[in-house]
Length: 371
Image (cartoon, rainbow, N blue to C red; front, side):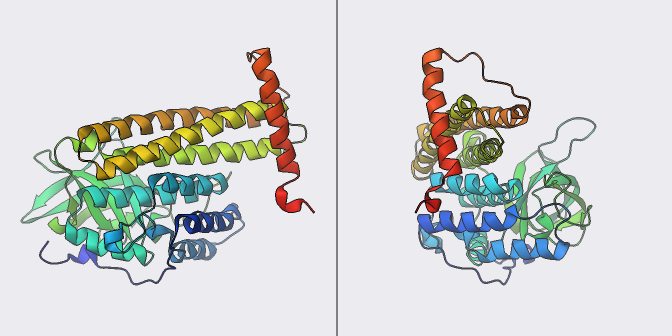
């Protein structure tokens, strides 16, 4: 990159400096508590923007930046812990963080040196990256948006669903393809001529679920300096995809913990159910940690085997976490109806019931309440 494209102008912001992995997890828990209070109708667009500004200033957006660019490059297991802790309080916060970390990895793996220098420095200062997914066309799923040649540059048109509150992000990563069928990621400013957000706010919908941001692209000018090219077939099982699956698994784990928390807070939760769900969530957490270590190895290893192992471990973690979260949500819904767990061998049931009682006791009498 000879010159920095206007699309990559660095936002001006100041963020806290997070120095250790433990500090990163602590900050994530604190920020998650702020998002946890964001109930539908209980806040205004101004307070929503204020929470996002606090998130940017927290320093969390810079924790995965490589050390050679001034970051602390936390392990991928810690990134997963951050996303799980966030998602346990707020599905929206978990999605925002996961999308940002996944986009940073795209730049790390496929970006140019100029792109990395500019965006990594901005992320350390609190800049946020969001992600876009094209809407289906003619009833068929779409993986990329078309880029039309325009002299030495391109034009982008179409519509997509983006990370919640993308309008308050700094950039979005858009998957694209050229007339020749070549795919590339596009790093696009979140506010640029020809880009329009369909909704009027990014407040939670009824029930607390945050909708994806619907974005329209109409003849948006694209500079070649803003394109990221993945070499060959590495995108299919490369580190960015593996990390994306890992962080999705972490979000599912957080959702499962949130559902388990609702169950624990119920009037008369069944100890066996609590024990079984706790065990399944713990198994998912262990698989997520293993996948994080495999991705760490793939980021520094040159052999294809490293990338394959990371992909397989992340896929297994995602499936396990989705199943555990689904069971936890279903159990939280069934609890009020008095449905009991069935099909568990008696010996195992006794162990799980004791485990459930321990979890219930810890929930009702947390350590900080002890004299």
